[in-house]
Length: 296
Image (cartoon, rainbow, N blue to C red; front, side, top):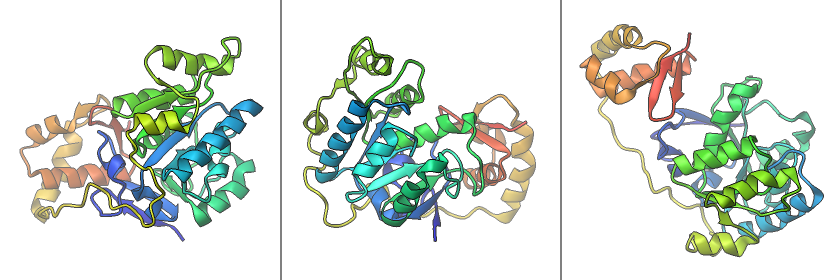
């Protein structure tokens, strides 16, 4: 019941297409039209406090009523509260494993509802079991789909802070909820505020800061700002040559795609076609700064 959406297709989320390392293909279960609307990521601690969960439900619902979709990672705690509060206004779960892999297992009922009335997306191939190395790439998608990231509770060195850092690298806004300095779940958010994140006590703080991007709930899906462009197909002979040359120029050390294009002296279309083939075959890994490397 799901679908694959490739980078460059009209339904590919415009904000995600604009980051420096967008996934070439995403799996989508549910309503793919939700990916076109303005979105705000809400993340936080898995061992969230009762107050933190209550605050998350309230602010997520208020943002949903203002026209924002909610993006989160379907984890325990803050993520779950954010999804549950916005199933009626648009909730998008980004998974670390394949789109068919339910994690954590106790969120299966939530997963089923998201796949029915919301959206579930992943860049990993179907059947992939989530491991620790899958979560940072997942976090970049959470921030990449969004205009900003709200961190409700976060301990130092938590995954939520990784998402906030990636948001800054992508030019997104970072919002943080202040809390007691003696509660370790607020040390991360208090630190974000100290470093310049927007202190957030309610939805109005976010709406005012973003300049009213979505003041009212849209009655129809919003057309992405980035549309697919027609690219001239490469010659088959160029692709065959690129299949020999590109792997020979790559190794475990990341190099920029621009540098690869200069060294290959082949058409960009042929080189990028082979890069995509290698990535889909799990032989290539992407890194920040539009760099790639071969998987050893």
